[in-house]
Length: 323
Image (cartoon, rainbow, N blue to C red; front, side, top):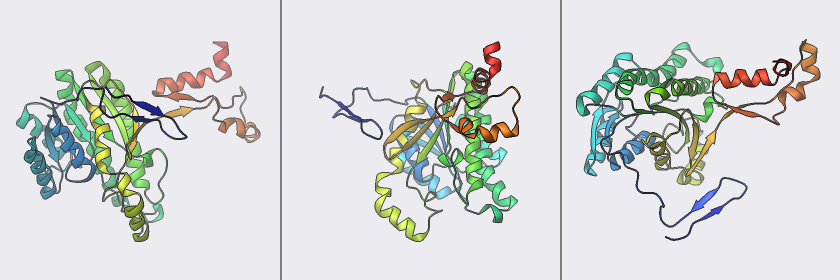
């Protein structure tokens, strides 16, 4: 087998090899639902899973787009059925899962990919504007997952992926509705990971970066043109799909992880807490005097559960040394 080498520079580690050391990972006899699969990342995810043997329920409210994805899969020898159910409505989400059960007899994989982006400065944002984004991005993912959950528990197996966004953990000006909707998926995904473990249900979260029609919406025409020329060739949606397949494969043991992906890169993203400042008689003035200690990141600890956070807080208070 040809040799491989690791290159470590200022950025990510790059693994170079001329042929894979791992047998092809397949999804034969598995059934996957991919929401928002009519275009962009969702279409790429559906096509890759089908090419690896999965039967795919292609969900999108754009009927022609869903049909086209299903046609592409079938023309390549794969198995797919289109669903036009609106997952932003509870009945639509339930109908989508029912279609998987009625058509293929089961559901093994759920990729909550569907999302919308509606740009608006917060001062101009209406309730309807915020509500619509939450219904599709957050309530849609919740409703489909809730409908699939009993089937996962009954069969003792399931793989769920929430497609969130770095905007939900960082920031994105003029898109607080989108950021809120995607940030909620991180909390939902991590909580369900804790609940699903005993039932053989693995739940993870992805933060993708890819060139899609939705991703270009917040850009000015000049910025969009610059992106088309300088950035888009390096962040195709197709490079996200291998990470998706890795996370939802039956051999994956990852649980509650947040994985960033884009431009051929995959990396862990995590939430941490620093030791901070403690005083038994904490006052407002103490915090002004010790703001540097409060904000110092040195010695941080990665946290995954609320229990981790509580333990860490106790350990870094004076009470911890007295226990």
